[in-house]
Amino acid sequence: MDSDMKQSSETPSNIPTSKSNQQITQPSEETRKALKQPTFNVWGMERKQMLCLLEQMFYELDLVTEFKMEPETVRCFLTSVQKHYQENPFHNFYHGFSVTQMMYCVISQCQLQEHLSHIDILTLMVAALCHDLDHPGLSNSYQVNAQTDLARQYHNKSPLENHHWAVAWRILSQKQSNLLLGADPKQVPHIQQEIMELILATDMAHHGEILQTLQNIENFNFSNREHVTALKKGLIKICDISNEARPAEQAEIWADALMEEYFLQSDREKDEGLPVTPYMDRDKVKKADAQSSFISFLLIPLCEALCKHFPLLNNLLLQPLRAARLRYQQQMDNGMLERQDM
Ligand SMILES: Nc1nc2c(ncn2[C@@H]2O[C@H](COP(=O)(O)O)[C@@H](O)[C@H]2O)c(=O)[nH]1
Ligand SMILES: [Zn+2]
Image (tube, rainbow, N blue to C red; front, side, top):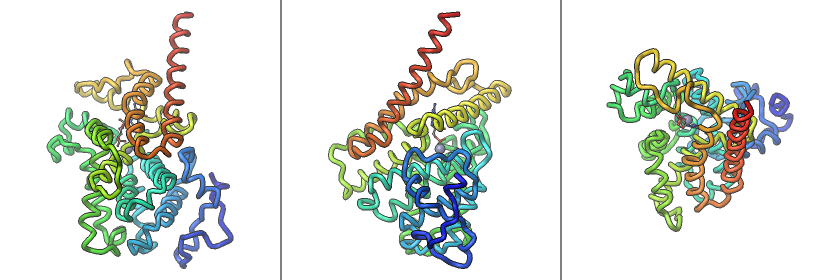
């Protein structure tokens, strides 16, 4: 990626040239194009490069101008978000970045800026970036079973997602990182509410109800607020769980990272005498089976519901997901053959 981030000698497309901007390495045209594809590879990137690309997405979507954001505030916000992701195997800043990049990719490819308001685009992007802030690497089921401070604070209701939003709120409450400082004050409470609702929608406990709402929409209409809300929740969810729509080499790294985090949690549950979350148990779970089931029962149905209204997602996400499922099924078949041969 280093070569992709080469300093551009010309003025970059839409990042303003200011004194404080002069040191920033600008993404090349090639990288800016790649950023709009699900094939974009986050692995191996440096943190500084990721900040630069996030900044690029905010400019490209016209959010900085529309909400009168100061360039320094945008940078301070992004840096603060990065610092508030923990170094977990899976729920780390790379995941936050990757979900945001997928959101940017879907918005760009489906040309959603032409149909959604700037507030909708802003809330989708900020929620995607902040949706797992300060994730401790232990799921909601652990929080509730262990009766952690978070579980008690939020009465066992989406303790993690409530916490992610609380941290996002804290970052936005600091003057130097408050992206909404220049926005119309009458719009700010609505923007905050929308970000919160999107982050809360990422709790997989709501998967069924969000999917069903999307499936029940017959003719999608951008003027219907209920339709737009269902779409936004569907979008943040698909971006959150869409690693398997990425190229196999990248998706396998994500799946390995998730398994590592799951296994660490189940080890801890065993050590602490807590109920062991079945899909996290290293003695029972096989990656290929887990991924094949996740793709079949959760990912593909959600993707199909979105494709019904946005057929462009078919080539972008649904076909790669079907290919990934086939790959894992072949791995499972090969595993069975190997066992039979022994
Ligand atoms: N078995 C798999 N589970 C997955 C995968 N990608 C995501 N997930 C699960 O969904 C939630 C999403 O919520 P988050 O906001 O916490 O990221 C995540 O925790 C996993 O449990 C996958 O590829 N395979
Ligand atoms: Zn996530």
